[in-house]
Image (cartoon, rainbow, N blue to C red; front, top):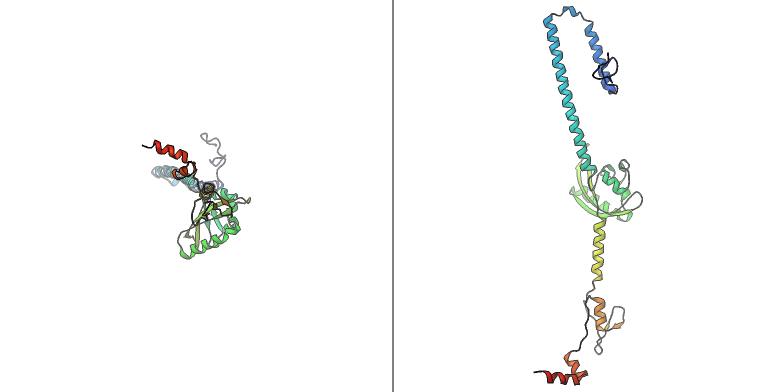
Length: 273
């Protein structure tokens, strides 16, 4: 008879229609043992023995229900742990990779795959140098050599390339750990530092544009013109304006006023108390 409480159960076995094959096999084995017990001479049992058997069955049923509840809670905790692992590892803001001593990728998180433009599974067994710009691979080889020789954390900056050919600046932070088989492994953190690199370059460019006067400046002893770095002569104010942020306002000093405009100089002397 089909259990009325669980109409979806399979006929004759009391299991849900979508029960796992292993569970169904366990049920068949239990039914086989139950039929073997039914073939025994039940008349030999006394009422007291029947009550004892019934009590044992009830206790066993309660134990199974408690174990099932405990397994359910353990499964929920495992699911929650997997979710936290996914959020902390796969959704981290930086790429995480585990490399062999030879530089082959054994494991990578979702962020690393996104940075490199490859499916997460497609990174496994790939050499990390496959994603490093050729001109910067020597930086990585020195970084890896020093890492496994010293067993101390190492950091380097280099250019990495995505599967589609795009480049980005990356900071690699690596540590050595021991694998399950005793072999040394590299735990690698990949951070995209392209924006900070671009900001640093822009800042350096701005500094380069801030020109300062330094060293020996060739100046004419007579007209006071200055020779620039291209060999051309220019007025002092032009030269200074081109090499600094200084601005000029023009006036006449008292000595030049007396020399060039003596009539005004006399007027100034008369008005001086």
